[in-house]
Each structure stands twice: as structure tokens, then as C-alpha cells.
Image 1 (cartoon, rainbow, N blue to C red):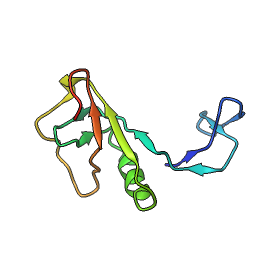
Image 2: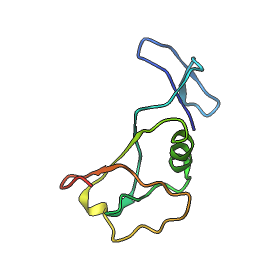
Image 3: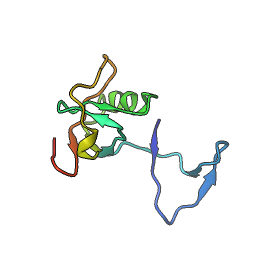
Image 4: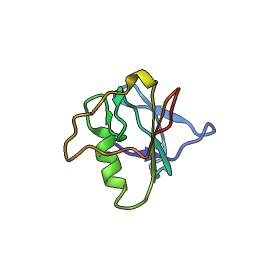
Length: 101
């Protein structure tokens, strides 16, 4: 997974997967990364969608740049403890409708 520079003025091309993508090949590393989740715990670990894409990306870019990772959730998505392994990355913040972790 990588991120590329793009603005609304730039054209897009449709990939083989049918996804519009930037024509540019200039990779960028974001300052803030919004990370998807379906569950989280008070220790700021998350349960994602099972591919490990964001965990691998966070691990890779932290070698080059400090970034802020944020997850958005509803408070009911909190569970007592997320089962984690050595590849799972802790988020900096999780923002819910009732609390900021």
C-alpha cells in the first residue's frame, strides 16, 4: 500500500481493478493517517478488516517519518482486549462519539 500526490485538478486513470487512481507516480508519506477499524480496546489497538495492510504500512513508514495514526469509532465498538500479535500497530488516537483515547 502506498499513497500518491493528487488534487481535484489532476486527472485520474481507471486501474485494472476498476479503481480511479492518480496518473502521477509521486509517492507521499502522510502526516496523519486515518486507519479503519471495526473494534478497538482502551490500549488503542484495533481490529481491522483482516488484511494487515495498514499495520504493514504504518510499520514501513515509521522507519522514515513519525506520523499520527487515528481511528474513528462509535463507543459501542470498544471491547475489553483486542487479541494482538507482533505485527499489530497501536494507534495514537481513537476518537469515539463519547471519548478520546
